[in-house]
Length: 78
View (cartoon, rainbow, N blue to C red):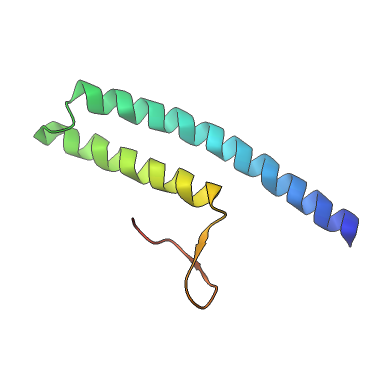
């Protein structure tokens, strides 16, 4: 089982690294959009919401997923 667990952990880490790299690209693009539309303006609301969602996803992945008091995986907003 040790080889299986090690392989699983290596695969999980590989997937996380690739998703985090993608999330960095997405966050960069959303930041560019928010600068274009000036974050405080009405037209900047959608890009700002998308940026917040992307940053939350990245945080969730980096933390290994948040759990509730019963140990179940949870997606809790900030």
